[in-house]
Length: 298
Length: 261
Image (cartoon, rainbow over all chains, first blue to last red; front, side, top):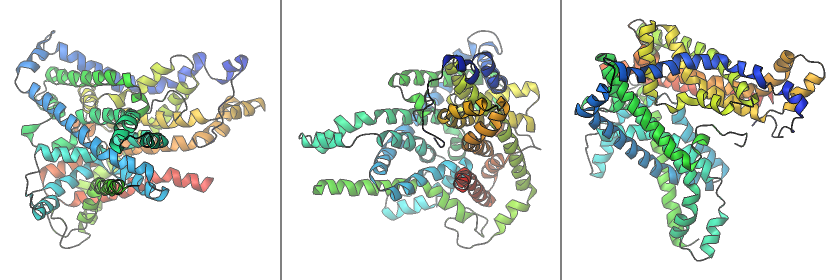
């Protein structure tokens, strides 16, 4: 990345044992990190999942409760719907933006990159707070809507408000992977399609769009997973009557001390995420999006 | 290009300007609001003053969480950078079990944040770590670890192993090779990992909300509480300060790199 792009020469087998710290000693370096993760991540998550089957009594009672209490299913479905909407909206907004990033000159591009990165660095609390100010009943957004004759609308404390806030917070997670893919697309392929008589829309749909799919999938997965587990933004911008899974879990565990019920919700959320990753990993590129590129090819 | 093409180009630019505006809108609200002289979230503010910036740095209700957040973030940075750098070495230099180790180390990024947070809260309740600085540091370090592993791993993959071999063949001990050759070469990666770790901890709200006690609050928790309980523009002043500090920190590795090269 920074030092040298020369690939390391193939190592002779004799030196390998000494210089690729391999074998027994190399793995010891990971012990502190694995210990930390084991104690503060694996054991707690496994514990919470176990609790969902064992608290208050061994069995599936918590899951039966989850499907019959009349609240959990509604909240889970609402969360899935919100995550889907936010994913689609970020995709629609990020696609043209990322495309323009690939065709403008270097100076305009660095401005566009900065605009994406700036919110990335801004405190989540600060941004969510800003949306409270922007969306309040007599706030700037409603002033604007009234001026154009569309408002005022009730945005604060509604699902619409939560959607706007979450979209803004998650937009960079869609834009960056998308840009990473779009800039690798050879534009001559489009020209070729046009020369061969395709209309611009057909060229986009049959050539450009399929080539951009890895970026679309990577960005969509990131946004969807993050949206499923969002807590701060819905809690600050939404209303308790329209809570998301994260809020319901929080109430069950921290206020009702219902660890089994909260654990069951957490397990469902976790399984949904894994399922999504499993489905999407067939397209590849999820790992790359999360920084797991196996070789130094990034 | 045809007329239709030009119209499409114009539409594309217009949409992108709107998206760009949407991305930065919060920043343009928070910064001016921190300088309001009213006791409200009126925007745009009709009068200006510095009193909320002064309050942010003098009122114990804000200063104590700020200091807590800074202390926790520094400890998280040290913990996550040290353990994450070692683990990145294990992943890049280890031939077998690499994929499993990498998957494990990056797992906190895949499990939904709120699940991790509540699992840690439940475990820490029985271990007596709720409401302690140690608990906050451990929990934040777990979230920060993947970022260090990724950035240091990226530096290590581009490191030319022949440089290490040359040092060793010239008689340097493994430790000297590491300290004199390897570490300086991967320093930029370690530094960006450390910055990510700091920012992750400094901005973390969910776990901190569960682990808080009346005597221990981080800055994001105080901001969350302040918004839910009363109308206090100090949160805007605090946000501005955080924005400036975070931006400076993130530009720091780049700046150091430019100075040294």
